[in-house]
Amino acid sequence: MFEATKDDAFKEFVIDQLSCMEAPEGTAGSLPAQDYSAYFFALEQTGNECYSQKIEDVMKTPEWTLELMPFITAYDTRYKRKEHYNEIVAMFRDKQQFTGYDLVSLIDTIAQMSEEIYEYYRELRDLFKVIIKEKMKDLPNSSEIMEIGYSILKACNIGVLQKEKYSNFGELVWRNIAGIDNNTCTGLKDMICAQHIIFNKQEV
Image 1: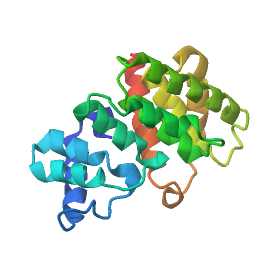
Image 2: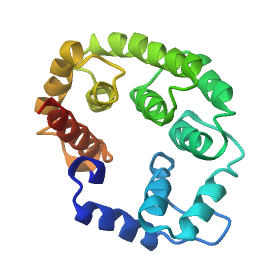
Image 3: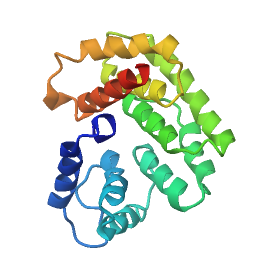
């Protein structure tokens, strides 16, 4: 939400939450894997090297999963000169079926990639477009409406999808999530809200 609003309250909330999750050195702590990228945010905002250590601890994870790909891609882009892009792309290329959460991991991974290595960026972008078109056929009754909506809005915001063609689908999801219980959407509602704010700012 900080990216969308620039409200320091959201920045402080993230830092406070990470501070409450202090774990022994050499471990990633209790932070869910999909939230590991918060360590990059905290490091950039505070300069505290403890977050740099947390980043390195996560990278010691013995097995790569799709859920980890946005974090690993961010690390590879920042620190490893994009040398593992081929392996990252292969994780998605070899996937036979994509769940809604896999779709979220895919668009978040694309967001962390540099277009300088265009071959790999384009492959993931094109893969995303194929998957999202199939997923959209089930809207608005899909059980994955939250994941689809977030992915569409973020893809529009980072230039993967054309706003003129896809923004209506993102708005459709936005209108449909109002009645969803916050306790059942595991943060996705806030993620969609942030992308919706960014989308509307770009339209101004």
